[in-house]
Length: 331
Image (cartoon, rainbow, N blue to C red; front, side, top):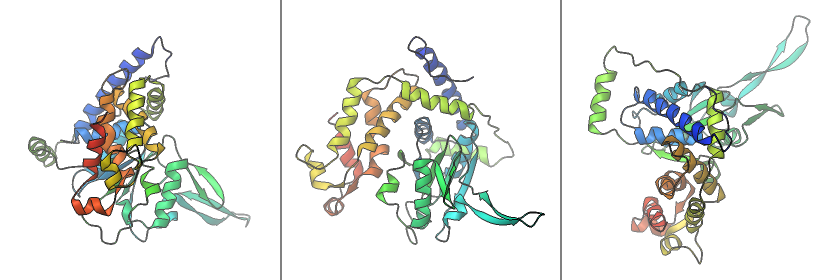
């Protein structure tokens, strides 16, 4: 089924049909990924919004398996890059090689790297050098790469899911603010709950194979992304997004907690991300329009990597979660 951008007379049916398909996608992913419902929902919201994901989690919480599973269910091709300090831009983008044909004529041929896929996992991205991170940044922002002075278009859709280990920081290169801002969401992956972990242990230590199937095609996913942008959004939600983002910036009109503890504040891209993600969350829940509750629910994963605290906050034990909670309390 192709999901088209519907006119006003039939948009409700399109939204209902899409919500039903997204429910099927959730169920398929749940056959393999146990106890991470919130994480899966936020990943789907990010992809429906056309954005990139930064996953923060310790080893062994199924981050790699999430990429493979989500890619299969959404009908996308996927590749994985293991980031290391000696990883060069050519290792992910590709390079030109000199070839000679039968007539003796020499020419360059471009060999594509693993970035030429629809769903790319950059594992432990903060272990890659700043030069390699910058090459990935261009691809994320422009959906093209430059090789030999020529631009090569990346497949569409194109999404990056990068991971970071929050524990071991030795030998890493922290992502700069400009790079962090390119990720629509930062999602924390916690340990599963007791019952979910028990189910996972039983399911993954037997010979049973939980086969999953594609629910969407790449074209249908792009249609969903287009439909998200066509969803109506109320003035109250727009005002809430604007108030939340602007109140996070130090200034005369900012709350005391912001002026006292925030060193780096969210820019306009944070508001754009919230507008899209709120629509996508409403669609995922089968609603025709987002509400202020969506803004509150998505504030933390969208804002926390776009803000930084000053030394006073660190000294007094104030966290970004505390600051964002205080901002959402005012909505």
